[in-house]
Length: 162
Image (cartoon, rainbow, N blue to C red; front, side, top):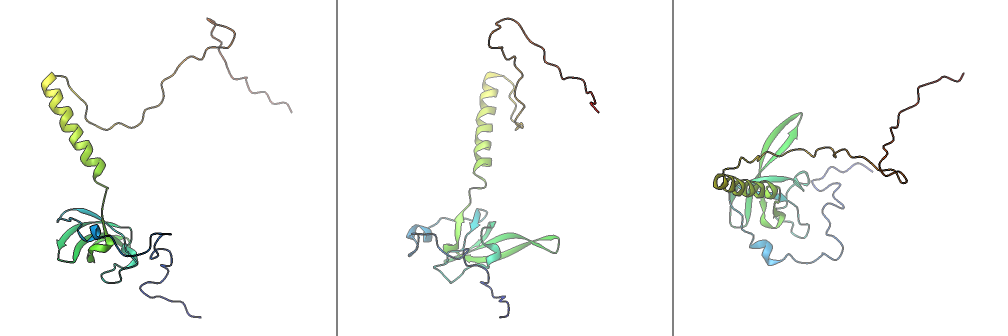
């Protein structure tokens, strides 16, 4: 049998609802507040065929550039022949979720502003830069029987027993 190359080819699990999650969409999905510049995740809802994005865009994050009465325009990056192209697609609101990708960044920004205000009030210099996880601090392990004695452990010198 010849191979199929349709627009919904190889989407058996991608465009299927989860177990016990079938049925109509909640009304809150239609009342989702979306503004230009918001980050959204494109997540195709298989129960609504109108305005469904292509399977490539399923699970991608983009930025809203246009809002209409039933759909939104989203800018998404796509890798094409080794270069990244910004694609502009329109997707119905049922196939979009608010993204949480900026949540941590915005929270860090709020925390930094609070730390700067506190530093200005107290006059203490504060470091706002993120630091990588440092290695654990060294310590001495006490032996089971000896309380004050420290045992030095050294490797044995190599000896070839041929």
